[in-house]
Image: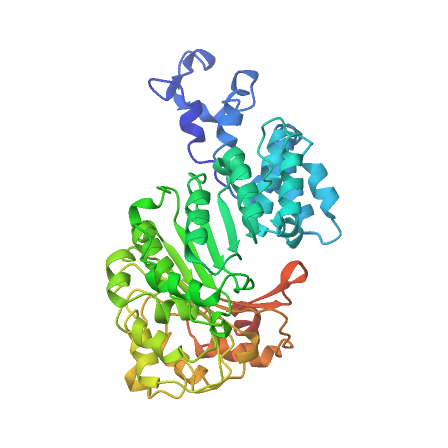
Length: 487
């Protein structure tokens, strides 16, 4: 291990040669390199070591230093606990929620490590603890915040909240007025009246108190209240114009936006969703790096011009599920959009219904030159996505190095297409959606993927979902080179 810059830190000014003739005989004189006798552990240098250690970032190097000598072990003890021991404890399933939370009280640096871990991993109990679905829950949370002496109550700066009536809306506004500035990730579900104005006013009021939000998920849930006269409500929707873009507050930190609607095809009358989606995209689209929306929203409520003019900085686009009659419309629109900075395309489960191979092929080809990562949900039909398409129709994806698919497709015939067009693939991940379970294939079967993709370095198999999931990693050395098979 090298400590880059160490010698420069202790090197004295001037000539680096020292005349030591006074220590030699009178008849001979010589010079030699002072580093041969320089004491790097002298008391005068003790203040230098913390500065030198601050440049050590990798865990393996930190671990090596702590094992070098007692002096280094003592000086790095706090960092060893914070950066080596605590993260291992966090990942241990036997380490309970109370144990994790107790670690936060050891000291400020360990608290920072624990909070950073929780923000990255987001265990299910965190989500449950910060999910408020009723007015009573919101009120209890507000009462709890009175005991925090003004400190933010959001452990990971995230909140999942659902407003079901005007009482809930008013309580949410009170909560946001006090602590909205400390929320960076918000999942907001709106389940209220079928009339557009109350929904619009509630949304704008809520957003105005979230100046630092970075991730925003807006889910307009199923319409469940039919207390108003439906004919009157339908007339109100027909007269309702797009929300003025200027009415949305500035959210300068926002880079990720997700918009989805509940199962509204079963509603009594169709709701013009574009009255919400269009203005939202116009207000925040230019600053977004990640945009996710439901299939119906993309197919019916966002036109191609809106995509090309307001989402041109997009780096990741996601549709969580493709399971309705809008499949063809999604791929047709994707084949027409121009997102020059798109690096990741994520498409969820594909239904078993057939759709146009022409549009799906052209949709993928439109991003072939810039796409670096492709994430696909279970492909339930071998005619879905790229499968069954003449390979001549699809060009090579030169920059695509990462592919994430469902374990259910480990034996899918789609690989006969992938192998010819993702020729530079380096990372392959099999990750289940929801409660799928597929046994891990044999090593012989997994080895075929390393032969199929000559540049593949790592294959990850994720078994299970949620907190109970675990990963199994395979490398080329494990499966190919170790058996003497080379490409």
